[in-house]
Length: 363
View (cartoon, helix red, strand yellow):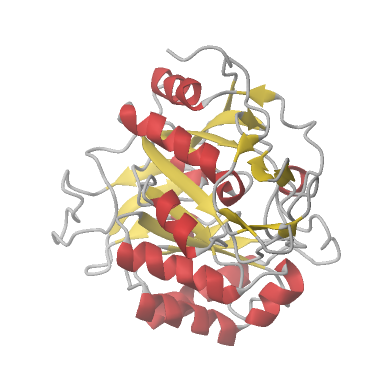
């Protein structure tokens, strides 16, 4: 069974002037026949909206769940990760630009329908499947179908997204998701407009919805770009918003930028910037703040917010210490650590294993 070409998409409506409007994200692309949206993968064909990447992937890998990054969701376990192509933001600093900015489908070499993906994940011993590499918002119908196939096999689902999505599709998508890491790219409308051609407000709406109206386990990542979103004032404002609107238990990851895509003129993020950001967020009151894309065992480990004991030691993606009870409480003081824990941690470690999924195989 091969990928479905031009799968009929949802979340659109016809306009009086003969065009159709995509209602998936706040761009509201309006299309004549034969045109594509900014994401490139949602197009108009014969008067309807189609998803051109259904059943097609840029590749499948088994990763540690910490790589998403998720530090409080089934630590140490393997996750089957995949994406397609395209994106509905235009971030000049994109770290996965060869996938998310693809205008052609030559990278979509792997084909697999939802049941085949779920079956491969189960056979490989994965605890979850992650929609990642590019934003699952743009292939939401495919992601939902995969999520349903995974749930039928007892697998969890993870969305790694920039959160740039409208209310109705957001509610439908996250109804099928167990955990999410949302990329909060900066904390000013100017940053989003200048570097992403998007809107901060729409992302904050997604974060608020996930925390206040859903059961999805939520973590946040902010890539710190020197001179753009790393000022102490902006970091304090971001952290204070998370504390006030989402609560102190939502993990926040500050990760290091490296020059890429259209921002090759910037230097990599210094470790000191990440450590300053972590200190600011913890001072504001956030309990679980991490550094990423650098070697920093202290900044990547989890600590009890009450007694300060190390609960989970990490060296990059490898768990080096585990001081949680089966109920997810600190062994020393008994205070619960927020997260989704299921007994002892897994031992997948830092491995990244490519996986070939047979398109025709479903069981």
